[in-house]
Length: 128
Image (cartoon, rainbow, N blue to C red):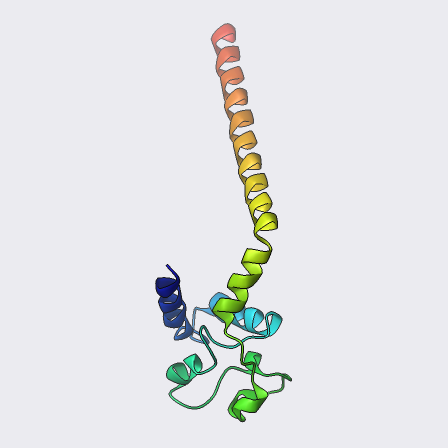
């Protein structure tokens, strides 16, 4: 699963900064900035995207315009895939509780909607 996930993420890098993919672009920028990482497996993943030795500005240790054109010494070295994977493993309980709470709200909503529907049908039967 890890291998396929990394391959898909690397394919997604090629959509970075393209028209109609602002959400993906923003997501990569936020992840790289917040997790202090660059690329899927390392910063060289971006070299294939740009066909040059450069990275997005969100990979820079100190953000500035066009800082991704400078030397690799000014970029984050950590791989984003592993960094996010470790963060998810450390916060698995919180992520699980959030998922269960969301599912519970959905189930309660469906239950109440069905109860209301049955009451309306029952009222229509008596009124008609």
